[in-house]
Image (cartoon, rainbow, N blue to C red; front, side, top):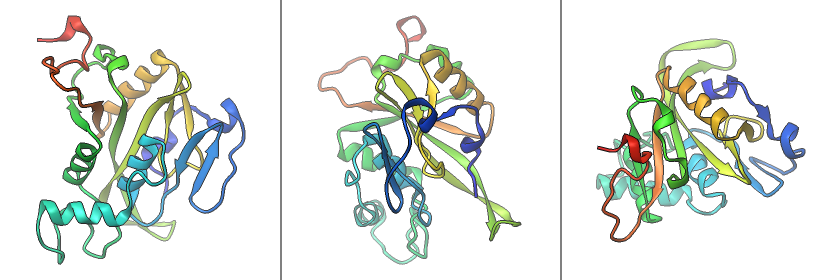
Length: 212
C-alpha cells in the first residue's frame, strides 16, 4: 500500500544523487539513511529517518514509552493491541523529548512561507493511510501514517518509509510548495526543533514578521 506522500511530485534520490543500495528494510545513498516500512512501525522509521541513525530508537524503547505514558501493557491506548506499532502522537512527542527536541503542531490554515526553516531541525507528517486486504480489497477504515522530511546536504528530502528510497523535494521554495500541497489535504504537520536552554522566543520557528 502506497502512502499519499509517495504519490506527490519529486525526484527519487537515485535521480538526484545516485542509486540506492542496501539490504532488508534499509538503504544508504550518498550518506542518506532510509528505513523502509515493516509492519505498522512507521512511527519508529520516521524517527530514525529524521535523526539519520538506525539505532536512535528501537521498537522496545517506543513500547516502553507507551507504558510510561499509560502504565498498562494490555490494550495500551498508544500503540497497536497486537504489538505491531501504530504509535500515536503522544509517543512521537515523548520520544523527541528524550532526544532534547520538541514537536510543534503547525496550523494548516497558515501559509508555510511563514516558516523560519533555518530554526527547524526537521518535519514529521501524519497522513491518512487506506487499509486493504492484500493489494486489491480496500477495508472500510483508515489508519494514520508517520513520515519524516528533512534538509540534507542542501536539499530537502521525503524520507517516507513507504518509498523505495528517499525522494528529493528540491531547495527551500520547492519544499515550501510541497508542504503547501500536503496541508491542503487531511495531513498534519509537526515541526521538530532542538530544545534551547534559556530560549525565550517560543515562536522561533516563525519568521520574525509573522511572530505575535
